[in-house]
Image (cartoon, rainbow, N blue to C red):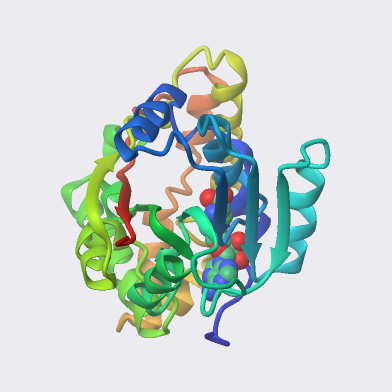
Length: 301
Ligand SMILES: C[S@@+](CC[C@H](N)C(=O)[O-])C[C@H]1O[C@@H](n2cnc3c(N)ncnc32)[C@H](O)[C@@H]1O
């Protein structure tokens, strides 16, 4: 595949990923997909296994869950995390081509992986190839651009219209740069149903996760503490969606200039200390809305 990629940093694998889905919503989807009898599952681009473990936990008949990822260190970590559950097995491999025979799995899935590949339709065709006839593929992929319009209490106080526009503009330039570099479309979710059709999927169903990543005082419980810690580390490490260096690379590849990047970076990372102050005084809050699509389709019999 592409040689242009850089491995995901550990920042992308925080346990906030455990809180992206409501369990009862996924159980409902299993019924809608007709996946109650699924025994074998493939999790493509499994990372350290967050998505595969969540999916397996709502599939009542799952006996074997294989995860595949191109990064050896995520395979090692995923293997460690499921050491006490013999249903899980992880191996290194690429999404294109997948290192499996045709018609191997009842359900083939991925989460936030197609947003990183240059040719998502080809990746979906590969997922269908290794799915058994009549089997199911499921992809959970976001529109991250929408996130630039979701505010926390510290952004809504003083943000000017110009700053908001800058935020959206910055994101879109980076997004275009990432696409131009062959590293995928960060907001691919909007296009996913059409890509499923193009790849040959049947019986397509399209939903949005009904979960937000809301943070509000007094931040009680593991979910609140995990989301808050993630938000804090994004601010402390001066992260937008990506770190400074990676963002600049995408921004320039998307047609932005170095001068504009300099000017916009402090706006988009909100590095004025207001977030830390609001946390310290226990007043920070956000509805934490996200636009995460979950699209499914079947392979023809
Ligand atoms: C954002 S992470 C998502 C991890 C996991 N699916 C989850 O939701 O927790 C994307 C993962 O896809 C993997 N990946 C990206 N492109 C890939 C490819 N072409 N083949 C295999 N793995 C890939 C990365 O190494 C990374 O672990």
